[in-house]
Image 1 (cartoon, rainbow, N blue to C red):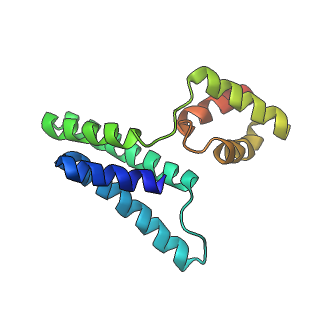
Image 2 (cartoon, one colour):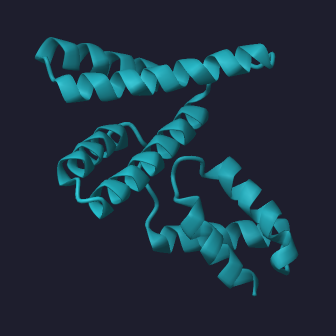
Length: 149
């Protein structure tokens, strides 16, 4: 995944696509920051799953910023954030639909043997291990809560 992003950066630089270049550089910087943190903690460099998590976090930050810009009447800045979101999404794994999410949540609940809300943390951890970057965990949390009640 790291190589794919680096190749996309080179392509964008050749095409002189300034917005794409700046967004891809932000992605590469975030990945390098995590590599440095891992190195300090004695861990391996970032895996593809961790890169997916980094990208998901970047998308969430930009969605929040776009909403704030819209609320503040700064439509051009909101559009810029949405443009960055579109670029970042190009590198994300395909997201699960709500139906697929519901099935995955049900399956993990059965596998773990969760019976109540006190098992929600275990279920969410298992989902994050199995489906990192493939689902919106805030939506998944609501589904798990509903299934466990």
